[in-house]
Image (cartoon, rainbow, N blue to C red; front, side, top):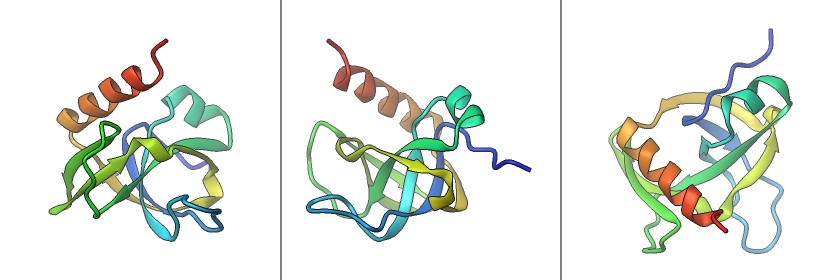
Amino acid sequence: MAMVVKRFDVYLVNLDPTIGSEIQKTRPCLVISPDEMNRNIRTVIIAPMMSARKEYPTRVSFTFQKKKGQIVLDQLRTIDKARLIKNLGTIDSKDQLVVSSILQRLFAF
């Protein structure tokens, strides 16, 4: 049975190997690719999550499972679903709206 991945799910993801300033290690990541894409192809678009806090317009502060951190929308990656280790849950609807809004501004032309 194929893995069911949904937008705004948080997965523990193996991001290695990396190059240069890319976020590395195994860490929680937010799925931002649309469900249609997630159902039909073997890759997903993710945004890493980290506990370090830097005030950038492309970083979303959040609390997930009682831990504070940031969703790093300036380090989006497309990964194979084989990198997904474990589903950790879903971010709340307020954070979903903030992420969507920032992504719209980021890719506006």
